[in-house]
Amino acid sequence: MAPEVGKYQRYNLTADVYSMSMLLWHMMALEPPLGLYSPKMMVDRVFVKGHRPYVSEKWPEAIQDLLRRGWNHDITVRPSMEQVMQELGGVVIELENGLK
Figure 1 (cartoon, rainbow, N blue to C red):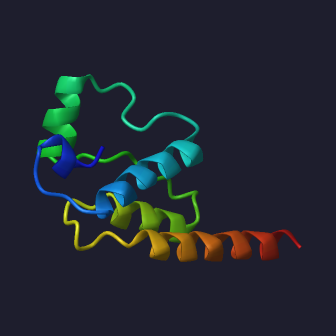
Figure 2 (figure 1 turned 90 degrees about the horizontal axis):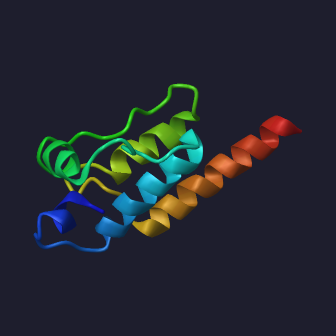
């Protein structure tokens, strides 16, 4: 969940973008993000200190950027879900063109 939700602060639809970014990271890495964190560690490291999973340089640059913006602590930096869909669509097209 987004830090603002976990800290019982006001939030908006970008909390879903944060969650989707974590899910995208899970799909890219084939392992759960921060899976070794206990609930207490999650609160301290993610909600308070802003830790995020490592982003592999092997992943497409657009995915790396999308992940970092999607789970940014500043909710005004996070893209809308519409922007996420457009950017992911662009990555799919690039990958398809690269395979031809």
